[in-house]
Image (cartoon, rainbow, N blue to C red; front, side, top):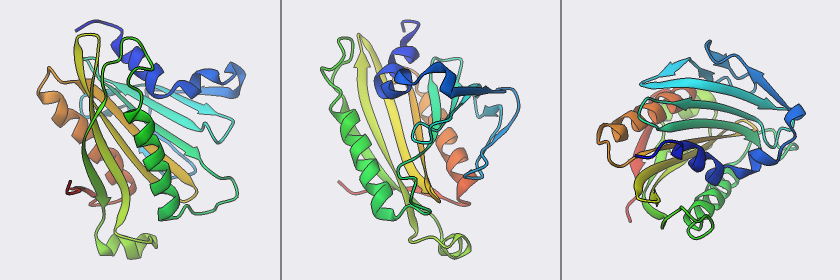
Length: 213
């Protein structure tokens, strides 16, 4: 597999970060756990076989915070925490669901917008579901707290899978993106471990339930 492909992936799937002025971004230590003040999420130096490579916090809340991880097999795993509406204290299920649909559709229509990028295929979707006791404890609106979608695509001759997870915590969106090679079988389990670990840090006993096609 060619080197440098995770950079291509990052540029394709989160280009808006590149448009932000450098002085608006604060870099935080990567070798210690990062605790996000606004959501309560804690991101350690390692999650599974992923090592944290950077933490950047933008002073513009619409861009927010990005916690970036990578592993030795060229996979990338990113957590984005940002605002949709500064006037909203708690995002509703309708709001995060609408945002999830927008992001999912944008990814699905990336085909042809970048020369090396092959066809993007949407594979499976899941709900991120929590037990009733978690709903009561956290005063949630529903047992469904987020959604996940898996994609397949290629860059040149190299095949990849990519995962999208979106859920809300209070007024913030938390978005997870994990992209990994389809040629390394174990990477699917590594990616799922990362997703489960992060989601369960926010919602105890959360699990992904397949959505019937």
